[in-house]
Amino acid sequence: MKYRKLLLDGTMASEIGLGCMSFSGFYGNTTEKEAHETLAFCLGRGLNFLDTANIYGNGISETIIGNYLKQTSAEFVIATKGGISRNSQDGRLFDNRPEYLRSELETSLRRLNLESVDLFYIHRRDLEVEIENVMETLLAFKAEGKIRGIGFSEISPTSLRRAAAVGPVDAVQSEYSLWTRSPELGLIQACKELGASFVPFSPVGRGILTDKVPDIDIFSDRDIRKNNPRFQQPNFANNVRTVATFKRLAADLKLPTATLALAWVLDQAEHLMPIPGTRSAAHAAQFIQASDIKMTSEIRDHINSVLPVGWAYGDRYSENQWIGVERYA
Image (cartoon, rainbow, N blue to C red; front, side):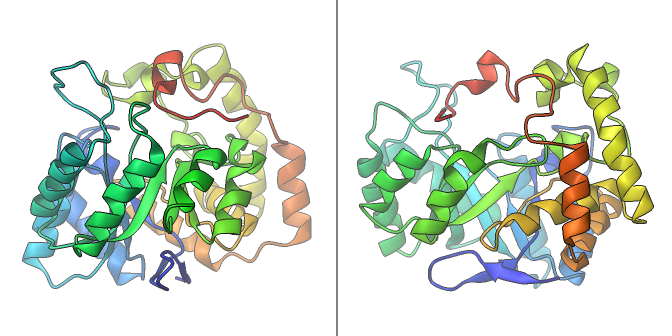
């Protein structure tokens, strides 16, 4: 496993992280034992970067990680998120006020069995609180030693620059993969300009860029794909048909499809650190393999020919799923 700089203070982490939303059952039933086996497998192969959030299973994902840390001497670089409002008395979907973020962070630290977390993201922007004021809150957490790095999820390049004018922003995460290329329209570039890491989530397209075709007929109500336009017919059938050419390319290279998809993401820029999610050690092995792949101009050209920019059928989110995400292109 290779390592890249995650935080502006020079903190390094595995160039491929593990998205831990799956630990809470979003994509199917799992157990804490299975999650702990996956964590042990990843750490043993050099993957030491975990990404979670307090909203994942209302704390289940953080608790599972915290229990593993308590039972072992494992050392991970850990990122979590806060700012999505639950059971709000005033109807707010997102809350970036200082008192709410403090409560969110301190609850996350208790679940994770940590005194401080390496990276704390604002999960979604609260438009009633100016981003400059949000930065002041995060800088206070940093001064108190509760967080080491500051991050934002799904913000625009303009918001990133506004935040960075107040203090250092260490990382930004957004969806990015061969079927979601919008961050190329300014966000990846803004991160590089400001020295922030760019952390792509869903880098294997929520399962579409893997060897197994997702079964849309068994998606649970909790599965974000159930109402996602790209997993609705006829979009889904068209997407499966298009991805088949990419799968054949991966097979010709004797690689799992997910491995090639992640190798493509890593190849886009040195400040990208993708966080594919899984609850399975077998799938994690395919992710980790991507760190060893050497891309060539021939492979790049072939990928671009079979999956050109804009090939995906359907929007990446439904209208409801877009709420809270800053659109900029």
